Image (cartoon, rainbow, N blue to C red):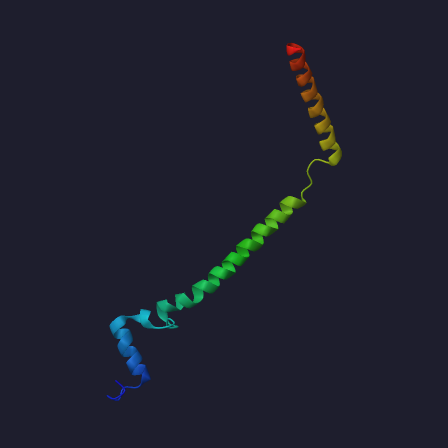
Length: 95
């Protein structure tokens, strides 16, 4: 082709016309092919933003105060008393 006097761009255009844009190592930076350049960066930015908001929401939930340690201890003691009484009642049935 170079022997026929075609320059580099003409040869490239010839092969793109025959085989399509898929033969290029990188898509052209115009028209619909521009999406191939923009979408990966947009996806990375979108994923980063989503991750930011998810982490922010998790941190807020973690920062909320639940029942105090004293309340939790009272609850545990009450549960232990109830379980002990149930175990004692069952023991009395069989022994």
